[in-house]
Amino acid sequence: MAKLSVAQAAEKFNVSKEAIHNRIRRGSLDCVIEHGVKHVLIDEQAQPKEEPQESKYYAYIEDENISLKEKIKELEKLNSTLRNQKEMMLIEEKKKIEQIYKERDEQLKQLLNTITSKFLPHLEQRFVDEKVDDVVDVEALSSEPIRLKRFLKLKDYKSAKNQRIKNRFKRLVGQDERVVRKEGKIYVDPVKYDYRDLLE
Image 1 (spheres, rainbow, N blue to C red):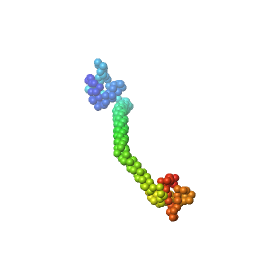
Image 2 (tube, one colour):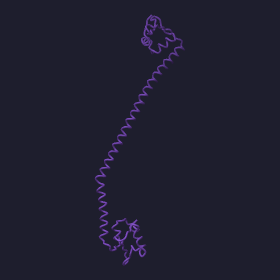
Image 3 (cartoon, one colour):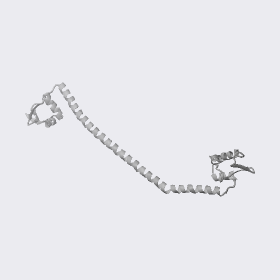
Image 4 (cartoon, rainbow, N blue to C red):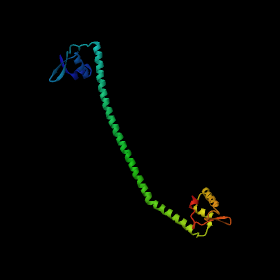
């Protein structure tokens, strides 16, 4: 009578260790426990006890069930690992995106500061200069009335708006002291009068 460990018996019968434990529980294999270790007793001369066909079927199903459970555990563990990795990747990507937007915001702020500090003062000065030029042009005309055509030319309006303003002035001839007609021409005095209400 040979005495084998569970692993040796599994190798001898070409089955899993769980299958050996199952056969021991069913009584198709004898065993002894020595010092807390289970050993399988096998008569090397005799063939292992034949199990009934139905028992073999149930044993096969049970072995497969155990194998599937082990695979399920492995897959669940792998799934958990992959889920954790995915969450870490998403967190890292989120941080990268936030950093990119932060850097772009900083770049935009620097660009706006550069534009404001370098170009805006020049634009403001140019605007002031243009307004001063307009005042000088108008005041250079002294307080004498000038032709409406010349006055509108200084304003540099588009032709459509220019025509609308002319029509307004024509309708006020003889009704508004700011608009006078001399020799068939309309005259205005921009130094003496304010025409903003007619230029809108």
